[in-house]
Image (cartoon, rainbow, N blue to C red; front, side):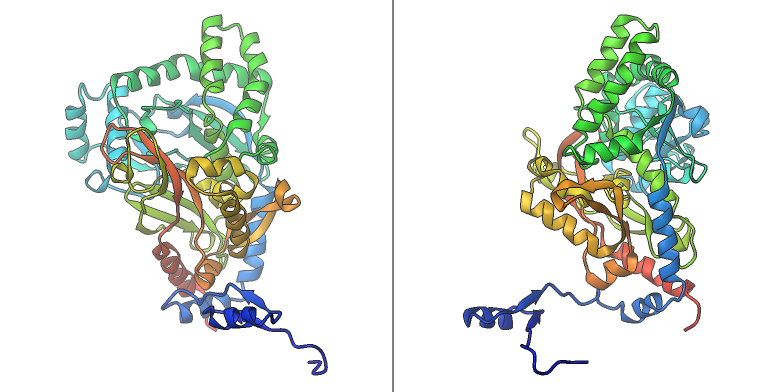
Length: 464
């Protein structure tokens, strides 16, 4: 019932003319930031929003995501966990061929060929890769994730994660450190030497420490780091130090040479991004728990290969919906600039898919100086992400928002209806193979990913 005797309330939306006129007359009113749905999506959006399965399916997806655990249980060679055979490689993002691969991905594949002893020079590696006889496939296709180029070869070691709630395993490579590293497409001799040290010393040392300590609850560490100013994608300082705190006594007690223990401690303690490679498989377990629910419109994967940005959605299974990867905007290292930047690359957007990274920026004000934003931008970004998600994760509570849970579970229909795109914090790789990292910044997915996913969801919806 409308109370016509009450004081009228004025709400403004759309163009600012009415809002400005009322403000100039000191008239109380409420501006609303309203946007129309993305162009050309009306009929498919109506069909998806009218799908009688959607509400219950998304509720199940959210319940599974929030219930997922993430425990570090072992550290092993990729050949034993991923099932890679000699001459096979995984990479970040949706499927791609050598012909369409970007500079950083090509550089990382060349480096992996050299590391595995399959080529004697970069030119020989390039020739073999261009010949089409080297199998490559996404990390996601084998249940894992890879940062930046995400290239994984059989001899590389990986963190092994378990989600006992859903009987699922995930994995991610060990973080190489900063500077010229394989994940950014560098393959200089020092890069290959570091990879060999990681396989000979770092991997076995971490394995010994984890096996002595027993399973480590990484989800609990992530919850703490979010309250300590990390957002889990571009800032992992607190998480890295908490992991080192837990592992160091077991490293010392494992009977390893003291020089190896010192070298491992220096690598972890001197690299604030080390813990990213543990946040990523934890996030993968969380999002994978929500996969393959008919009618659910929740995004379960966001990933980039340096050429394409791709998403996967719960209600459409393993199908990829892709669009051109954008170039991040942000801050650049040394003498590098925007012309040196490669389009967006890496599986690390799995952190945003799980409600961390750009979605938790409000809790990480220190990160904004690294990615070129402001503190108000961080709070506004997280607040907007609540508009396109189906749940809030109490395990990842944000103190600055009165301990509100991080926005979790991107809803394709909400993205299309509002026009708000997910915000991603990311590193920036050099576009020329062999360059390495050139900066860090912010980027958003192309709208095509969400409009084509919406079309597929509409086609799969029951008749109205």
